Length: 284
Image 1 (cartoon, rainbow, N blue to C red):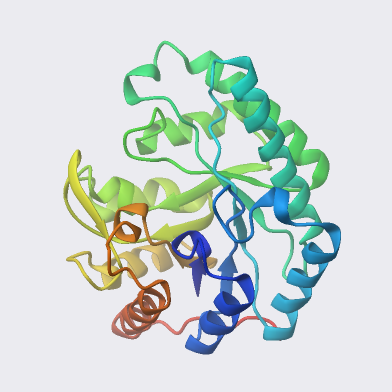
Image 2: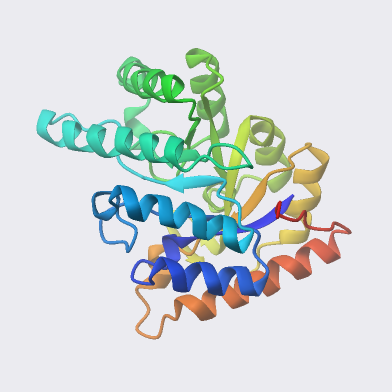
């Protein structure tokens, strides 16, 4: 396993500043975020900038395991859905363009809807997800759908069902343990169910139980990262453990995106050591 960082927690930080800082700390992979409001927003990246960013990753020896392009797949309003579809397929195209020596980054996105929508709208979900996966497969890109607390896709059994129904090598999971931890699902249980289907991960810190939970920077809360890493290793996961700093944290008046990355790296590096694991290194 390797230690990565998502620029989800760095919306206004220029990509060069982010990459230099993260690489200097010791992260070996970075997940760029391309949704509106970010310095690497999809529509702001012309062909030259896309190529330059890929070169910058290579110059720093950083891998790009995924691209965060979160947009709902389940909007009922046609105008809203068409805009979401444009951005999702555009992000898939960008993943294909950003393919490097380590392979092609996965597209990390979420489903939308609410938990109570799952049963009555499962066929609708299958149709929308299947359509996106079909597009992604033609581009050689894996869609990493992320189960998320408060969304229709919120439980391990739902995620496994969706994967089985679609039945494509181009649909896997972005496994964010925090969304199961705040539901009270034991780490061993969610890892055993989902790690075998995961192409990428997110980790945060967290405390409390949904809906009265709080997401935190890794190292600020009680989550046992050592136990998590041991279970992930036992499950055979060998990809990136990528930290994500939530919007909850970013709303703090004193939030420091560079400082958050520093705390995160120390926390994860210490957890790897405590678990008896050595983080893998990026190809250089």
